[in-house]
Length: 159
Image 1 (tube, helix red, strand yellow):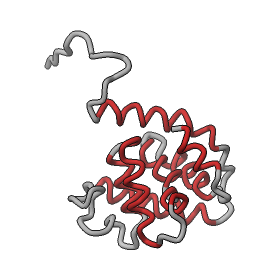
Image 2 (cartoon, helix red, strand yellow; image 1 turned 90 degrees about the horizontal axis):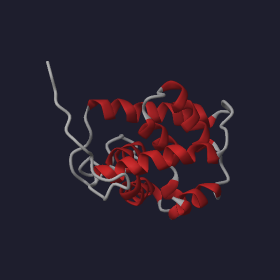
Image 3 (cartoon, one colour; image 1 turned 180 degrees about the vertical axis):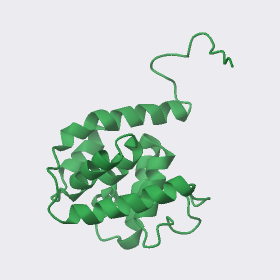
């Protein structure tokens, strides 16, 4: 997380912050979409001048930290056709469902809107708690040892 924050601080452009801020306002419940807006240019920062491959690089770099959906959105949004390149999905496999296709279109629209002078983008540190929250959820989803320990008891469904 520290390395990611340092990388983002090195960006001379606040378009990613404006994109994320727009997505936070328009889709407040979709935290992964907001982070995709914030992180969509990470591949360009990792390897400047690498052309279209920047979206694939960002997806590969961020998937272990933030999960498959953030990686899928970044990869798909970085391609002209929105498919994420060959195979469509984040790992070259099938792409996301119709909800993710709409999320990618939303991400494209927010990026375009953020290109013009937009709302106050805030500061990068405002996004750290959300990055940490999604990263923690991604780790649990990937069966990494949960720092809170295993769940206790069982949940019984009634009805």
